[in-house]
Image 1: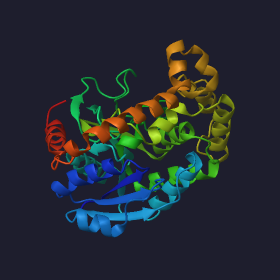
Image 2: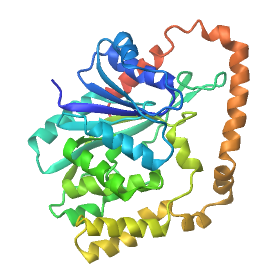
Image 3: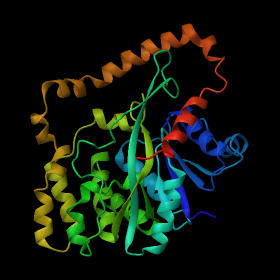
Length: 344
């Protein structure tokens, strides 16, 4: 019996939920899936999953609709406290995790108690779909470069004995694509709720720092996750249109960690305060963005609305053609499986 629980927060994108669970049901993986559903429109219930995916164990819980980062954090703390396994892996419903990676990460953590989490390589796939408003299947294009390739040295072990030296490399945490000890995972969401985050940028700060306080990170040089990088909807798009974090809030975050004795030295406090990485999400850093990016962010929601309207018209015209797609995910499943078993 595996010691890893898969946590999948849900926010609409119902087709993607069926898609990811269909893949692992087909492969009869030995994991328990915890689904935390805060969708605007609730489609699922426990009976639905028990009937449709009989070869995997699923625990489903419905939550009020996510309004902001704070309500999302409350949901994640609630679901994390129900997990009984030693380790967890959090995954979006439009992504795929590699079972081979999960197995190797579990074995590594069993043998190395000084490590709090294990990561791998993250790849991207694009699904091109021009005829309906949900791109759960279509033309499949794997991107040649790994996710985060623009950050030099992002994929690495973080194994300093001193946790303060580990935290300096927090950009390489990538905790969302890692197998992490449940004690650490619970602590992350407990602190996030105490801080009362304003947005998802602030959640990222905790995910970067807290795991490195609890232990070291091991990087396995195999694919851990394949992300769909162009999904039409979901919380990821909220980050594109939401306000960035502020210098004031980041300072409050550091003082919060200092008061909690998570950061214990003023030297580390000051090092993090001037860290280049954290400035990426600050509002006062937006003036350095080029005009194209600023316009894209300003008019992104308008662009999405127009695009979805066109796709809906296309879908109405081609509706009966899509009824013929009975095994619409087969090609994607085959390519995902092949990618997981290929060399980096």
